[in-house]
Amino acid sequence: MYSIKFGTDGWREIIADNFTAANVRRVAYATAKWLKNSNLPQVCVVGHDCRFGGKLFARETAAILANEGISVILAPQFVSTPMISLAAQKHNAGLGVIITASHNPAEYNGFKIKAHYGGPATPSVIAEIEDLSPAHDVPAVDFDSLANNGSIVTGDFESLYLSHVESNFDMTALVSMAPHLAYDAMYGAGQNAVKQLLPGATFLHANQNPGFEGRAPEPILKNLPEITEMIAANPNLYCGLATDGDADRIGFFDEHGNFVDSHNLILLLIEYLTTFKGYSGKVVKSFSVSDRVQKLCNAKGLETITTKIGFKYICEYMITDDVLIGAEESGGIAIKGHLPERDGVWMGLVIMEYMAKTGKKVSELLADIYKTTGTFAVERYDLHLTEELKNSIINNCKTGAYHAFGNYAVAQMEDTDGFKFRFANDRWVMIRPSGTEPVLRVYAEAENSETAFHILDTVKQQILN
Image (cartoon, rainbow, N blue to C red; front, top):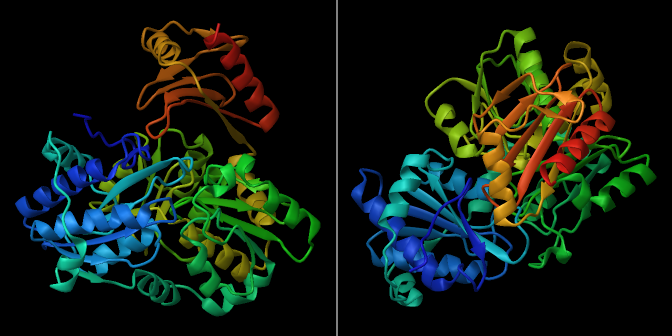
Protein backbone atom coordinates (compact mmCIF):
# COMPACT_ATOMS: atom_id res chain seq x y z
CA MET A 1 0.00 0.00 0.00
CA TYR A 2 0.87 3.66 -0.18
CA SER A 3 3.43 4.39 2.56
CA ILE A 4 2.50 7.32 4.80
CA LYS A 5 5.48 9.55 5.55
CA PHE A 6 5.50 12.84 7.42
CA GLY A 7 7.59 15.70 6.04
CA THR A 8 9.05 18.77 7.69
CA ASP A 9 5.68 19.55 9.27
CA GLY A 10 2.96 16.94 9.01
CA TRP A 11 1.81 14.48 6.39
CA ARG A 12 0.70 16.31 3.22
CA GLU A 13 -0.57 14.98 -0.06
CA ILE A 14 -2.81 15.97 -2.97
CA ILE A 15 -6.51 15.58 -2.21
CA ALA A 16 -8.12 12.54 -3.89
CA ASP A 17 -4.69 11.26 -4.94
CA ASN A 18 -2.96 10.05 -1.78
CA PHE A 19 -4.83 12.30 0.61
CA THR A 20 -8.00 10.24 0.83
CA ALA A 21 -10.45 9.35 3.58
CA ALA A 22 -9.00 5.82 3.55
CA ASN A 23 -5.44 7.02 4.15
CA VAL A 24 -6.59 9.54 6.76
CA ARG A 25 -8.20 6.66 8.63
CA ARG A 26 -4.89 4.78 8.55
CA VAL A 27 -3.02 7.76 10.05
CA ALA A 28 -5.75 8.32 12.63
CA TYR A 29 -5.63 4.64 13.60
CA ALA A 30 -1.83 4.84 14.05
CA THR A 31 -2.23 8.02 16.11
CA ALA A 32 -4.77 6.28 18.34
CA LYS A 33 -2.51 3.25 18.77
CA TRP A 34 0.40 5.45 19.77
CA LEU A 35 -1.67 7.37 22.31
CA LYS A 36 -3.06 4.14 23.78
CA ASN A 37 0.49 2.83 24.22
CA SER A 38 1.57 6.01 26.01
CA ASN A 39 1.09 7.14 29.58
CA LEU A 40 -0.59 10.34 28.42
CA PRO A 41 -4.25 11.26 28.94
CA GLN A 42 -6.44 9.32 26.54
CA VAL A 43 -7.89 12.51 25.09
CA CYS A 44 -7.33 14.07 21.67
CA VAL A 45 -8.43 17.48 20.39
CA VAL A 46 -9.21 17.54 16.66
CA GLY A 47 -9.82 20.36 14.21
CA HIS A 48 -9.49 21.46 10.60
CA ASP A 49 -8.65 24.68 8.77
CA CYS A 50 -10.37 26.23 5.74
CA ARG A 51 -9.22 23.75 3.12
CA PHE A 52 -11.46 21.65 0.91
CA GLY A 53 -12.75 18.56 2.71
CA GLY A 54 -11.40 19.65 6.07
CA LYS A 55 -14.56 18.94 8.03
CA LEU A 56 -14.99 15.53 6.40
CA PHE A 57 -11.40 14.48 7.15
CA ALA A 58 -11.62 15.80 10.72
CA ARG A 59 -14.78 13.76 11.31
CA GLU A 60 -13.09 10.65 9.87
CA THR A 61 -10.16 11.23 12.23
CA ALA A 62 -12.39 11.81 15.24
CA ALA A 63 -14.43 8.68 14.54
CA ILE A 64 -11.39 6.40 14.29
CA LEU A 65 -9.84 7.85 17.46
CA ALA A 66 -13.10 7.49 19.39
CA ASN A 67 -13.66 3.96 18.11
CA GLU A 68 -10.25 3.06 19.56
CA GLY A 69 -11.31 4.33 22.98
CA ILE A 70 -9.85 7.84 22.80
CA SER A 71 -12.04 10.66 24.10
CA VAL A 72 -12.29 13.24 21.33
CA ILE A 73 -12.95 16.98 21.58
CA LEU A 74 -13.76 18.22 18.07
CA ALA A 75 -13.86 21.78 16.77
CA PRO A 76 -17.19 22.18 14.93
CA GLN A 77 -15.86 24.93 12.63
CA PHE A 78 -12.47 25.79 11.16
CA VAL A 79 -9.67 26.68 13.58
CA SER A 80 -6.00 27.61 13.31
CA THR A 81 -3.13 25.30 14.16
CA PRO A 82 -2.16 27.40 17.23
CA MET A 83 -5.74 27.02 18.48
CA ILE A 84 -5.38 23.23 18.38
CA SER A 85 -2.01 23.40 20.13
CA LEU A 86 -3.42 25.65 22.85
CA ALA A 87 -6.48 23.40 23.22
CA ALA A 88 -4.26 20.32 23.62
CA GLN A 89 -2.45 22.07 26.46
CA LYS A 90 -5.48 23.62 28.16
CA HIS A 91 -7.68 20.51 27.91
CA ASN A 92 -4.89 18.26 29.24
CA ALA A 93 -5.11 16.18 26.07
CA GLY A 94 -2.56 13.54 25.17
CA LEU A 95 -2.46 14.74 21.56
CA GLY A 96 -3.98 17.18 19.13
CA VAL A 97 -4.66 16.73 15.42
CA ILE A 98 -5.42 19.38 12.83
CA ILE A 99 -6.32 18.68 9.24
CA THR A 100 -4.26 21.22 7.29
CA ALA A 101 -1.64 21.52 4.59
CA SER A 102 -0.56 24.89 5.99
CA HIS A 103 0.81 27.07 3.16
CA ASN A 104 0.68 24.45 0.38
CA PRO A 105 -1.41 25.07 -2.76
CA ALA A 106 -5.15 24.39 -2.64
CA GLU A 107 -4.96 20.88 -4.08
CA TYR A 108 -3.19 19.66 -0.93
CA ASN A 109 -4.46 18.73 2.48
CA GLY A 110 -2.59 17.32 5.44
CA PHE A 111 -2.49 15.91 8.95
CA LYS A 112 -0.49 17.64 11.72
CA ILE A 113 0.04 16.07 15.13
CA LYS A 114 0.38 18.25 18.23
CA ALA A 115 1.68 17.13 21.62
CA HIS A 116 0.28 17.59 25.11
CA TYR A 117 2.60 20.54 25.78
CA GLY A 118 1.03 22.62 23.01
CA GLY A 119 3.55 22.25 20.18
CA PRO A 120 4.55 19.88 17.40
CA ALA A 121 5.08 16.23 18.26
CA THR A 122 8.80 15.42 18.35
CA PRO A 123 10.49 13.64 15.42
CA SER A 124 10.75 10.44 17.47
CA VAL A 125 6.99 10.41 18.14
CA ILE A 126 6.24 11.06 14.48
CA ALA A 127 8.53 8.18 13.47
CA GLU A 128 6.71 5.84 15.87
CA ILE A 129 3.32 6.86 14.48
CA GLU A 130 4.58 6.31 10.93
CA ASP A 131 5.67 2.81 11.93
CA LEU A 132 2.24 2.11 13.43
CA SER A 133 0.39 3.04 10.23
CA PRO A 134 -1.24 -0.21 9.09
CA ALA A 135 -0.50 -1.68 5.69
CA HIS A 136 -4.21 -2.29 5.15
CA ASP A 137 -7.42 -0.32 4.97
CA VAL A 138 -9.08 0.75 8.20
CA PRO A 139 -12.87 0.44 7.93
CA ALA A 140 -14.95 3.60 8.28
CA VAL A 141 -16.78 4.11 11.56
CA ASP A 142 -20.16 5.77 12.11
CA PHE A 143 -19.41 9.25 13.44
CA ASP A 144 -22.94 10.04 14.61
CA SER A 145 -23.24 7.02 16.91
CA LEU A 146 -19.95 7.93 18.63
CA ALA A 147 -21.05 11.55 19.00
CA ASN A 148 -24.41 10.44 20.41
CA ASN A 149 -22.80 8.26 23.08
CA GLY A 150 -20.45 11.05 24.18
CA SER A 151 -17.21 9.60 22.78
CA ILE A 152 -16.94 12.71 20.60
CA VAL A 153 -17.85 16.12 22.02
CA THR A 154 -17.40 19.59 20.56
CA GLY A 155 -15.05 22.25 21.91
CA ASP A 156 -14.87 26.01 21.37
CA PHE A 157 -11.14 26.32 20.72
CA GLU A 158 -11.45 29.76 19.16
CA SER A 159 -12.92 31.34 22.30
CA LEU A 160 -10.22 29.63 24.34
CA TYR A 161 -7.58 31.23 22.10
CA LEU A 162 -9.18 34.69 22.24
CA SER A 163 -9.26 34.61 26.04
CA HIS A 164 -5.61 33.61 26.06
CA VAL A 165 -4.72 36.58 23.85
CA GLU A 166 -6.73 39.03 25.93
CA SER A 167 -4.99 37.92 29.13
CA ASN A 168 -1.49 38.34 27.67
CA PHE A 169 -1.65 41.60 25.70
CA ASP A 170 -2.37 45.26 26.31
CA MET A 171 -5.63 45.15 24.39
CA THR A 172 -6.17 48.90 24.73
CA ALA A 173 -2.92 49.51 22.89
CA LEU A 174 -3.76 46.93 20.22
CA VAL A 175 -7.26 48.28 19.63
CA SER A 176 -5.77 51.75 19.19
CA MET A 177 -3.49 50.32 16.50
CA ALA A 178 -6.25 48.46 14.66
CA PRO A 179 -7.37 51.34 12.37
CA HIS A 180 -3.80 51.50 11.08
CA LEU A 181 -3.60 47.77 10.26
CA ALA A 182 -4.34 45.97 7.01
CA TYR A 183 -4.79 42.23 7.62
CA ASP A 184 -4.68 39.67 4.80
CA ALA A 185 -6.11 36.39 6.06
CA MET A 186 -5.24 34.67 2.75
CA TYR A 187 -8.62 32.90 3.08
CA GLY A 188 -7.10 31.09 6.05
CA ALA A 189 -8.01 30.11 9.58
CA GLY A 190 -6.82 33.29 11.30
CA GLN A 191 -9.63 35.42 9.88
CA ASN A 192 -12.29 35.08 12.59
CA ALA A 193 -9.89 35.59 15.50
CA VAL A 194 -8.43 38.80 14.08
CA LYS A 195 -11.91 40.14 13.25
CA GLN A 196 -12.87 39.73 16.90
CA LEU A 197 -9.60 41.00 18.37
CA LEU A 198 -9.09 43.97 16.03
CA PRO A 199 -12.48 44.89 14.55
CA GLY A 200 -11.21 48.30 13.43
CA ALA A 201 -8.65 46.82 11.01
CA THR A 202 -8.94 46.69 7.23
CA PHE A 203 -9.46 43.11 6.06
CA LEU A 204 -8.45 41.33 2.87
CA HIS A 205 -9.38 37.80 1.78
CA ALA A 206 -11.10 37.23 5.12
CA ASN A 207 -13.74 34.78 3.99
CA GLN A 208 -13.69 31.07 3.28
CA ASN A 209 -12.45 30.13 -0.19
CA PRO A 210 -10.89 26.63 -0.34
CA GLY A 211 -9.33 27.45 -3.72
CA PHE A 212 -7.43 30.43 -2.26
CA GLU A 213 -8.12 32.24 -5.56
CA GLY A 214 -5.51 30.04 -7.21
CA ARG A 215 -2.71 31.41 -5.02
CA ALA A 216 -0.88 29.35 -2.39
CA PRO A 217 -1.68 30.74 1.10
CA GLU A 218 1.96 31.34 1.95
CA PRO A 219 2.60 34.83 3.39
CA ILE A 220 5.50 35.83 1.16
CA LEU A 221 5.74 38.96 -0.96
CA LYS A 222 4.76 37.47 -4.33
CA ASN A 223 1.49 36.18 -2.86
CA LEU A 224 0.47 39.49 -1.24
CA PRO A 225 0.23 42.19 -3.94
CA GLU A 226 -3.05 43.71 -2.73
CA ILE A 227 -1.93 44.54 0.80
CA THR A 228 1.23 46.17 -0.53
CA GLU A 229 -0.77 48.45 -2.80
CA MET A 230 -3.37 49.18 -0.12
CA ILE A 231 -0.82 50.39 2.45
CA ALA A 232 1.13 52.40 -0.11
CA ALA A 233 -2.07 54.19 -1.19
CA ASN A 234 -3.49 54.89 2.29
CA PRO A 235 -1.43 57.03 4.70
CA ASN A 236 -3.67 55.97 7.60
CA LEU A 237 -2.47 52.39 7.19
CA TYR A 238 1.06 51.97 8.46
CA CYS A 239 1.40 48.27 9.12
CA GLY A 240 0.22 45.08 7.47
CA LEU A 241 -0.15 41.53 8.72
CA ALA A 242 -0.68 38.34 6.74
CA THR A 243 -1.02 34.77 7.97
CA ASP A 244 -0.96 31.50 6.08
CA GLY A 245 -3.67 28.89 5.62
CA ASP A 246 -3.55 27.56 9.18
CA ALA A 247 -2.33 30.88 10.66
CA ASP A 248 0.92 29.61 12.13
CA ARG A 249 3.14 31.65 9.78
CA ILE A 250 3.46 35.42 9.54
CA GLY A 251 4.13 38.00 6.88
CA PHE A 252 4.41 41.70 7.79
CA PHE A 253 4.57 45.09 6.05
CA ASP A 254 5.89 48.49 7.06
CA GLU A 255 4.22 51.87 6.61
CA HIS A 256 5.41 52.10 2.98
CA GLY A 257 3.95 48.74 2.02
CA ASN A 258 7.41 47.15 2.04
CA PHE A 259 7.52 43.48 3.01
CA VAL A 260 9.25 42.78 6.33
CA ASP A 261 10.53 39.22 6.15
CA SER A 262 10.97 36.72 8.96
CA HIS A 263 14.63 37.52 9.47
CA ASN A 264 13.75 41.13 10.29
CA LEU A 265 10.77 40.10 12.40
CA ILE A 266 13.04 37.83 14.45
CA LEU A 267 15.32 40.80 15.13
CA LEU A 268 12.35 42.95 16.17
CA LEU A 269 11.01 40.28 18.49
CA ILE A 270 14.39 39.70 20.15
CA GLU A 271 14.77 43.43 20.74
CA TYR A 272 11.27 43.84 22.18
CA LEU A 273 11.40 40.77 24.39
CA THR A 274 14.78 41.64 25.89
CA THR A 275 14.72 45.45 26.08
CA PHE A 276 11.04 46.09 26.81
CA LYS A 277 9.83 42.85 28.40
CA GLY A 278 13.04 42.08 30.27
CA TYR A 279 13.05 38.47 29.10
CA SER A 280 16.13 36.31 28.63
CA GLY A 281 16.84 32.86 27.25
CA LYS A 282 18.36 31.07 24.30
CA VAL A 283 17.60 31.86 20.67
CA VAL A 284 16.90 28.70 18.68
CA LYS A 285 16.94 29.25 14.93
CA SER A 286 16.76 27.08 11.86
CA PHE A 287 19.71 26.67 9.49
CA SER A 288 18.32 29.09 6.89
CA VAL A 289 17.95 32.10 9.22
CA SER A 290 20.03 35.22 8.57
CA ASP A 291 23.45 35.57 10.17
CA ARG A 292 22.32 39.01 11.39
CA VAL A 293 20.31 37.24 14.08
CA GLN A 294 23.58 35.85 15.40
CA LYS A 295 25.10 39.34 15.36
CA LEU A 296 22.27 40.76 17.47
CA CYS A 297 22.46 37.83 19.87
CA ASN A 298 26.22 38.31 20.24
CA ALA A 299 25.66 41.96 21.07
CA LYS A 300 23.08 41.05 23.71
CA GLY A 301 24.99 38.09 25.14
CA LEU A 302 22.28 35.60 24.13
CA GLU A 303 23.22 31.98 23.50
CA THR A 304 22.10 30.60 20.13
CA ILE A 305 21.34 27.12 18.84
CA THR A 306 21.00 26.27 15.14
CA THR A 307 18.72 23.37 14.15
CA LYS A 308 17.72 21.49 11.07
CA ILE A 309 14.79 23.00 9.18
CA GLY A 310 11.41 22.13 10.62
CA PHE A 311 9.81 23.63 13.69
CA LYS A 312 9.65 20.23 15.36
CA TYR A 313 13.43 20.46 15.87
CA ILE A 314 13.11 23.91 17.45
CA CYS A 315 10.25 22.72 19.63
CA GLU A 316 12.42 20.01 21.17
CA TYR A 317 14.54 22.76 22.73
CA MET A 318 11.58 24.91 23.73
CA ILE A 319 10.07 22.16 25.88
CA THR A 320 13.32 21.25 27.64
CA ASP A 321 15.33 24.49 27.86
CA ASP A 322 14.98 28.19 28.66
CA VAL A 323 14.23 29.56 25.20
CA LEU A 324 13.46 33.19 24.43
CA ILE A 325 12.50 32.67 20.80
CA GLY A 326 12.39 29.79 18.34
CA ALA A 327 12.31 30.89 14.73
CA GLU A 328 12.37 29.76 11.12
CA GLU A 329 13.07 31.60 7.89
CA SER A 330 9.66 30.58 6.57
CA GLY A 331 7.65 32.78 8.94
CA GLY A 332 7.19 30.29 11.76
CA ILE A 333 8.09 31.91 15.09
CA ALA A 334 7.39 31.07 18.75
CA ILE A 335 8.29 33.12 21.80
CA LYS A 336 8.56 32.83 25.56
CA GLY A 337 5.28 33.44 27.35
CA HIS A 338 3.12 31.67 24.76
CA LEU A 339 3.28 28.16 23.34
CA PRO A 340 6.22 26.15 21.97
CA GLU A 341 4.40 26.61 18.67
CA ARG A 342 4.47 28.90 15.67
CA ASP A 343 1.68 31.46 15.71
CA GLY A 344 1.37 34.12 13.00
CA VAL A 345 -1.45 36.05 14.67
CA TRP A 346 0.33 36.13 18.03
CA MET A 347 3.60 37.39 16.52
CA GLY A 348 1.73 40.09 14.62
CA LEU A 349 0.12 41.27 17.84
CA VAL A 350 3.52 41.42 19.56
CA ILE A 351 4.96 43.60 16.78
CA MET A 352 1.90 45.88 16.93
CA GLU A 353 2.22 46.15 20.71
CA TYR A 354 5.91 47.06 20.24
CA MET A 355 4.91 49.84 17.83
CA ALA A 356 2.20 51.11 20.19
CA LYS A 357 4.51 51.14 23.22
CA THR A 358 7.33 52.98 21.44
CA GLY A 359 5.30 55.22 19.16
CA LYS A 360 7.59 54.14 16.31
CA LYS A 361 6.80 52.55 12.98
CA VAL A 362 8.43 49.29 11.89
CA SER A 363 10.98 50.95 9.61
CA GLU A 364 12.15 53.14 12.52
CA LEU A 365 12.43 50.19 14.87
CA LEU A 366 14.48 48.28 12.29
CA ALA A 367 16.73 51.26 11.64
CA ASP A 368 17.66 51.21 15.33
CA ILE A 369 18.53 47.51 15.14
CA TYR A 370 20.57 47.93 11.94
CA LYS A 371 22.99 50.10 13.92
CA THR A 372 24.06 46.82 15.54
CA THR A 373 23.55 44.28 12.76
CA GLY A 374 24.04 46.25 9.58
CA THR A 375 21.57 46.18 6.71
CA PHE A 376 21.03 42.94 4.83
CA ALA A 377 18.68 40.94 2.62
CA VAL A 378 17.86 37.26 2.34
CA GLU A 379 16.18 36.19 -0.90
CA ARG A 380 14.91 32.81 -2.12
CA TYR A 381 14.12 30.98 -5.33
CA ASP A 382 11.90 27.89 -5.44
CA LEU A 383 12.97 25.79 -8.40
CA HIS A 384 10.51 23.26 -9.82
CA LEU A 385 12.81 20.59 -11.27
CA THR A 386 12.66 16.98 -12.33
CA GLU A 387 13.62 14.51 -9.61
CA GLU A 388 16.60 13.48 -11.73
CA LEU A 389 17.98 17.01 -11.98
CA LYS A 390 17.25 17.79 -8.33
CA ASN A 391 19.05 14.65 -7.18
CA SER A 392 21.98 15.44 -9.46
CA ILE A 393 22.37 18.91 -7.91
CA ILE A 394 22.18 17.52 -4.38
CA ASN A 395 24.77 14.88 -5.25
CA ASN A 396 27.09 17.60 -6.60
CA CYS A 397 26.70 19.44 -3.29
CA LYS A 398 27.50 16.28 -1.33
CA THR A 399 30.59 15.44 -3.35
CA GLY A 400 32.12 18.92 -3.19
CA ALA A 401 31.70 19.69 -6.87
CA TYR A 402 31.02 23.38 -6.26
CA HIS A 403 34.16 25.34 -5.36
CA ALA A 404 32.81 28.62 -6.69
CA PHE A 405 29.66 30.05 -8.25
CA GLY A 406 30.77 32.50 -10.88
CA ASN A 407 32.98 35.03 -9.10
CA TYR A 408 31.75 33.94 -5.66
CA ALA A 409 34.45 31.69 -4.26
CA VAL A 410 33.34 29.18 -1.64
CA ALA A 411 35.21 29.76 1.62
CA GLN A 412 33.31 27.21 3.69
CA MET A 413 30.48 24.70 3.31
CA GLU A 414 28.05 23.64 6.06
CA ASP A 415 25.57 20.79 5.79
CA THR A 416 23.41 20.95 8.92
CA ASP A 417 20.34 20.64 6.67
CA GLY A 418 20.91 21.19 3.00
CA PHE A 419 24.15 22.81 1.86
CA LYS A 420 25.22 26.34 2.81
CA PHE A 421 28.15 27.77 0.85
CA ARG A 422 29.78 30.75 2.54
CA PHE A 423 31.49 33.51 0.55
CA ALA A 424 33.42 36.62 1.57
CA ASN A 425 31.74 39.69 3.12
CA ASP A 426 29.11 37.75 5.12
CA ARG A 427 27.45 36.45 1.96
CA TRP A 428 26.18 32.90 1.48
CA VAL A 429 23.96 30.69 -0.64
CA MET A 430 22.07 27.63 0.55
CA ILE A 431 20.66 24.77 -1.53
CA ARG A 432 18.06 22.43 -0.02
CA PRO A 433 15.16 20.27 -1.23
CA SER A 434 11.88 21.30 0.41
CA GLY A 435 10.39 18.98 3.02
CA THR A 436 6.84 20.12 2.26
CA GLU A 437 6.72 20.71 -1.52
CA PRO A 438 8.32 19.15 -4.64
CA VAL A 439 10.79 22.00 -5.13
CA LEU A 440 14.48 22.79 -4.66
CA ARG A 441 14.91 25.89 -2.51
CA VAL A 442 17.89 28.20 -3.05
CA TYR A 443 18.51 30.98 -0.50
CA ALA A 444 21.07 33.79 -0.56
CA GLU A 445 22.10 36.43 1.98
CA ALA A 446 24.01 39.60 1.18
CA GLU A 447 24.17 43.24 2.18
CA ASN A 448 21.24 44.15 -0.10
CA SER A 449 18.59 42.52 -2.29
CA GLU A 450 20.36 43.36 -5.54
CA THR A 451 23.45 41.40 -4.52
CA ALA A 452 21.41 38.55 -3.03
CA PHE A 453 19.49 38.15 -6.29
CA HIS A 454 22.72 38.32 -8.28
CA ILE A 455 24.03 35.43 -6.19
CA LEU A 456 20.80 33.49 -6.76
CA ASP A 457 20.89 34.06 -10.52
CA THR A 458 24.56 33.08 -10.71
CA VAL A 459 23.97 29.89 -8.71
CA LYS A 460 20.82 29.00 -10.65
CA GLN A 461 22.56 29.32 -13.98
CA GLN A 462 25.46 27.14 -12.84
CA ILE A 463 23.53 24.31 -11.17
CA LEU A 464 21.04 23.98 -14.03
CA ASN A 465 23.74 23.68 -16.72
